[in-house]
Each structure stands twice: as C-alpha cells, then as structure tokens.
Image 1 (cartoon, one colour):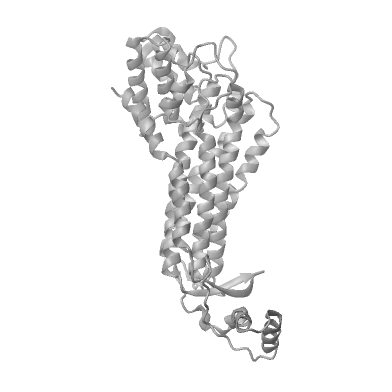
Image 2 (cartoon, rainbow, N blue to C red):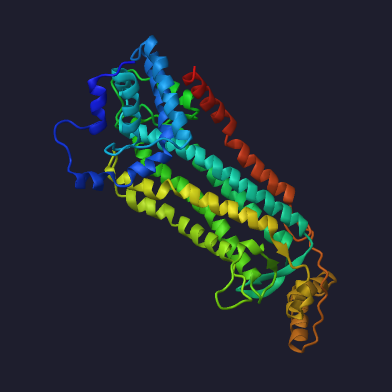
Length: 459
C-alpha cells in the first residue's frame, strides 16, 4: 500500500534510536530474554494497538480512510500471534517494535502513526494487564475444576472415617469427606484472592504514556470500554506505579492457590505410603525404583509439591525487584517478566495434574480395622459420658485411667451433627461460596468487549 524507504530501515534500528547505536554486548545485556518472553504478550500488544488507533481516529489523529487499513493489518498480525506464527526477528528489540515494523512493511508511513500519544511504558503496561487478565481467567477455571473434583470425592467418601492428626499423632476421628472437602473450601477462599487480583489488574493504564500523560486529547474512557477494563487507572503516575505492584499482588493470589495444592500433595504422598495406606494414587502417576521392584513412588505429586512451593516464593522475588524503586519507570521492572510470565503455565500444569489425580484417587475404606487407631475414639467416649451427666473433667479422667490400664474399648460409631463436621459437610454452602466468587469476575463482559474489538478490526 504505502511502502517506502523509511519503513524498510525500521528493521535495523530501535524505535528510540537516533545516531548512537549500542554495541552487541550491551544489546544482549539490556534486552535479556525479552524477545522470548514478549511472545507471551504478542496478541495482547496487538489488541491494545487496535483500541489505541480506534481512539486516535476518534480524536482526529487517524483519518477516516486510514483506520480500517491499520485495523485490518493489525488483525492479520493478531491471527499470526494466536496461531503461534508470530516471531520477533533478529535485531528487533521487543514485541512493540516487531508489530510496528510489520505494520510499516505493509502500510508504509501510515504504520508509523500508531504510536502517537503512547509510550512503550504504557504499551507494555496494557500488554501485561491484558495478558494477566486472560491468564487469571484460566487459573480461576482450573481452580474450579479441581474444586469440583474435590467436592465429588468429599461426597463419595463422606462416611469413610480416617484418623485426624495433631502433631502427627493420632488425635480424633476425621473422614475423607472432611479431608477432600477441606481442600475444596481452601480453594474457595483462594478464589477470593484471585478475584481481588483480577479487579486490581482490570484497570486501564493506556494513555498514561511514559507515566505523565500526553498533550494529545486522548480519550482514555474509550480505550477502557474497547478493551473491557473496569475503569482507567486514573492518575497517570499511579498507572505507571502499577508496574510491579500488579504483578506482586497477582503473584500473592497465585501463591495462595499453590499453597493449598502443595499441602494437599504432601498429605497425599504421606497417606499413599505403606505406613499409612490411606489412599491409592493412579499407577500412571507413580514411578518405580531402579533396584527395588516393589516401589511406587508418588513422583507426580512430589513434583507438584516442589513446583507449588517454588511459586510461593514468587511474591517475595517480585517485591525484592521493585520494592526500593521510586515512582516512575526503571529498567529493573523488565526483570519481573522473567519470573512472572511463566508462572501461570507452571501453576496451571500443577492444577491440571492435581485434578487428574484427585479424580482417580482411591480411598482405603477399612483403615479403622487396624487397632492402632482405636484410641482416637477416646474423646468420643469422654463426650458420651459428659452428655450422660458426668462432669467433663471426671469423664476425661475415667477414660484416661482406662487407657493406662489397657481396659479401654473403642466404640467406633461417631455422631457429629454440627455444621462442617463429619455428619454435616456443608458441601452445598462451600459450593455457593465458590460460585459467588467466580461469578463476580465478569469474564463474559470482558469476552464481549474483546470480541467486538476483534470483529471491528476484521471488517
């Protein structure tokens, strides 16, 4: 369309370059892994540009006959990114530079207009926001799938008793209904943190430019609507300050989910061991020993535990990278991408594997046949005597003396009726907590906004 010499020269220069060019060593050091990591951001960079140029047209910086050619070209780049064909070429600094280069190759000088009223600072901010928003949705959906399987197992094994432990000592009766259900409710609470992280993420930084706004009459409300954000990040300095803060808060939510899954994995590894024998993990999720033919090691859950524990360090890593920075943009923030962007895939794989195992996990329904667990019913006996009129402390002493004398006989029938106990798991109430948190995300509204933006670009 509008190819010219200036478009071709963009391939060998940085967007910010003038006469002095950095050495290859400095280029490698400053760019780091940005070219690889920016592939995560490519489709979101293009969507942000679609909204930005639509807004530029509304304020007269893009002519009527220029808008659709730009949007069409951006949509083609978006399709390449979604299909995994988008490549950041050698010598190109980042995703923003690559998109602008591709536009100028196609549209010539027209492609250079898209950066009006925008800095790479707010460009990467909006990329990260859109990426994070999409990935939080994936995490929320994966959490809900694991939650559903835990609830199913909780109901399936509601009446199968198991020992409860304190200090790793056999304590009082518990049940597999309680055990599975406990992790389900933990995930329901984690969903609240994911929802809060989503709300913090879903605010529009576009238009903050380098962190101090622009002399162009930008319509930030319009780009907010086009991209499906809840609101702008109003103050342009604070919009820039959101870099790092957003990632840290999102990382805290991811770490909370990871903490729940890691603890469950530890329990399952323990309960799967021969000394416990409470559960049987799917054979395909265990491995053998090179010298011990009897071994079935719970490798999948062990790796889930390690990876989720590693994810729990993520908020601290991000904090240490950005916590001592004043307001404004600093290159330090680039380093956050290296630990933050891959974290979603890491957590999602752990959630998917945990869901697979929980769905197929088998429970030993005859644990209490073993007399080593008889003493866990001592509290039940104390309570029976107290309910019959014996003062609690006297009942406690009576049962204690019977245990010491070897005369205690366990009555293995339990009758727990209060909310959240063995006999009243509150599965429906916990499901309602999860459903309420999940619905508040508003994924459908965001999806409609994104779809409308893409359809407008494809006309």
